[in-house]
Every structure is written in structure tokens, then in C-alpha cells.
Amino acid sequence: MRPAARAARAAATHPPGAPSEASQPSQSSAPRSVVSLRDASVRVGGRVLWSGVDLEVGAGEFVAVLGPNGVGKSTLVKALLGVLPAEGGLRVLDRPPGRAGERVGYLPQRRSFDPSLRMRGLDVVGLGWDGDRWGLPAPWTAGRKAARRRVEEVVELVGASAYARRPIGQCSGGEQQRLLIAQALVRRPELLLLDEPLDSLDLPNQAAVAALIGRICREEGVTVVMVAHDVNPILSRLDRVVYLAEGGAVCGTPAEVITSETLTRLYRTPVEVLSTSDGRLVVVGQPEAPAHHADRHTGQRTGQRTEQGGGRS
Ligand SMILES: Nc1ncnc2c1ncn2[C@@H]1O[C@H](COP(=O)(O)OP(=O)(O)OP(=O)(O)O)[C@@H](O)[C@H]1O
Image (cartoon, rainbow, N blue to C red):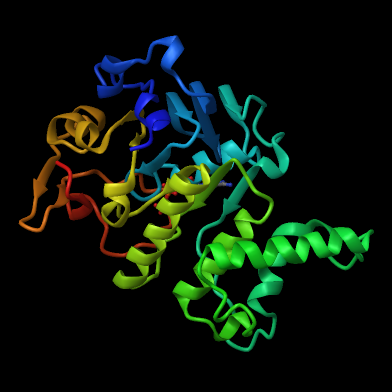
């Protein structure tokens, strides 16, 4: 774990007694705060999704946002982007959400490309540079050259050079995901918000993309906040996890948070965390969010087993 990340702590939240409360940093050792939530809450469709959430993410940390379907993980990301209003104190890179511009990179939930789409991977990545100027010529040749250089650089960084000139519709799911990560990185963000980037990938691709994200965080110094449905592929790379529930959230290291005791307290219902022989954690009894949710993930219902990571607990 990086020193900055090691020094960073979570301040969390409800219910009382969450692990991170016991391990607050001293002022002097805390890294620069990249994301800060103080007593934050979010309401969608007239319903409070979560409330009373306190969270600090320090520079260079890799943090996963976890919780049952429909609990509001994507909504948390949207609140950080400033596209959904939230109440309480929210700061992103020392500004209100939505005001940090290109310092924040975002990868939305999985988009699929039509196989007949002719746009090259390189051009998709380039949209991260000047997509807001769609259809307008770049003003200076020097600017265009710099953009091209940066696109090539970031394509190489994510290991996509071999297929970046192919139409993106002909790239595999894992290849497309790398190119989309490159797109999110092209403006050199300090914070990367990733919404289920491993969703729909097969296991080898999950492992490869997880390794890439870990490397971006560790070697490029980019702070990563990532929504994950299954934390297994990233667990060994994470500094901390945030587990969301209707009533609040709990935050800490995976070993602190993904335990029967902590999750039972958070969900106010018996939850059991089992460890498999290959080191994965299986969460049994984690409640589904209320029935308002149109579920994308079949097979993830109340009381069913949910794999939630391995190797650490
Ligand atoms: N604009 C909206 N208006 C009304 N309800 C919304 C809106 N956006 C999201 N919701 C609802 O808020 C809840 C949380 O959605 P969100 O996508 O944040 O959940 P999630 O935890 O990311 O779920 P999943 O794990 O299935 O992706 C869901 O019930 C969703 O249907």
C-alpha cells in the first residue's frame, strides 16, 4: 500500500461503531483530501437513498463502493460528479461537486458498442480530449498534435495499442473497456470515478482490467473510487471499501468492513461472511435494497449468496 494511502483513513458513519471511527488520522499525517462527504444524503424520486454518510478519500487511494443492488452506489458517483444534487457537505478536489472539470475522469456503467460501429478505438479515446467540442475543429495545430500525442500515450498506458486502430465495434469487451478507461484518463485526471468497470467481463478480463486500474492508481498516482458489484478481482489492490446501506455507510479496510459483525450492524439483519478455501469472501444474507429498484443483475436477491471479495479476511 502506498504511504499516502496507508496514512489515509475513512471517517465513517452510520451506524455508530463503524471500523473507521477507531482509526482517525492525525492532522499531520493525512494526505490531501480528494473526496470529502460530511453527513451527506441523497434523495431520488422523492426517496432518501442514503443519509448520514461521512467519507474522506485521500490522494492516491483506491477505494471501492460496495452494497446491494439499488442501494445507491451509482448515485454516489453521480453526486460526486455533480449531476445529482446531494445534501450535506460534499467536496471533490476542494470544490463543490461538478466544479473540478477535467481533474475528474469518469467511466459510466458499461456501454456496449454496436459491432457495426466503424469509429476507431483511437477516436473514442480522443473524445475524452475534445468530445465537448464535437464537430468543431481544434483551434491550433499545436493543440491537435498535443491531443494526438496524449491519446497515443494513454492508449499505450492501458495496453491497447495493438487494437486501437480497429473499429471499436470489432474489439472484445475487455479491449473496449481498456479503451474507455483510456478515454477517462486522457485529460490526466487526479480522480477517476469508475462505475462497475468489470461488469460483463469474463474472469481473465476482469483480472486484467483490475490490474490495469491498480497500476493507474499506484504508478500514475490517480485516486480511484470504483463502484463494484463483486469486489473479488480488486480486493488485493484496494486501500479501503465503502459499504452503503439504506441508513448510511461504513468505511474501512476490507478486513475491517467485510465481516459478519460489521455488515450485520450496518444492515440491522444477520449477515454472514464466509471465507472460501481459495480465499474469496462470500456474503450471505445481505439484504436487497427496497423494491423500487429495476434490477439489472438477476440472481442477486435477498438472502442469496453474494461473492464479495477474497484473499483478505
Ligand atoms: N433519476 C432517478 N429517479 C428515480 N429513481 C432513481 C433515479 N436514479 C436512480 N434511481 C433509483 O435509485 C436507486 C439507486 O440506484 P443506483 O443505480 O444508484 O443503485 P446501485 O447501487 O448502483 O445499483 P446496481 O448495483 O444495481 O447498479 C434505484 O432504486 C434506482 O432505480
